[in-house]
Length: 226
Image (cartoon, rainbow, N blue to C red):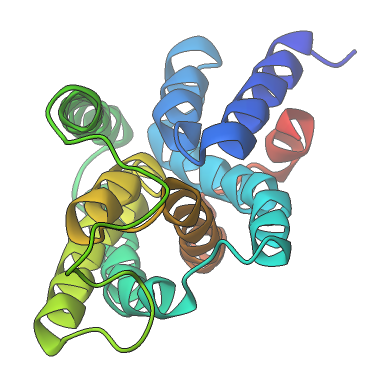
């Protein structure tokens, strides 16, 4: 008999991701570790597989609505994807260097610290960043035309920071990246959400495959969550 707990939680997380583009890893990975008792490395890989599929529909919908800035997503990916693979490599190094009990302790500590970072970033977004209107401010780059070299460099750099966290913990592909986009780009909120979901889907897909090759994905559990 299928345990309804992961099914219901997967439904809730999928709804939240489709609505906002954020929250998947921040909710799912701790749930898998703390409630389901899944080993942390397996929870990370399984969550990324789940995230790829849940974000796929949202990405397609935003493409149809033309609310995805492809240039921004590409430059984010130039930083996030290599760094995400480095995050996977770091996790594999931890697995090889320590016994399973210590690996679990280290990973839970890293995941907890990442959740604190995500929480602080969301507090900053909600309470300290100026509210964004649908129309970009005059005199600033509005997401059309070519980005400056400096803005491209910042996008790659911050994408790498977020991507590393995703590869190591599966957390941040939506939440952290959304705050990065809000900091770097004065563009419409709907474009922020669409670009964030699309980039997160590609990042989760690539890094998720890397985790699959290392045996960090429980396919039966991922299917239940879906």
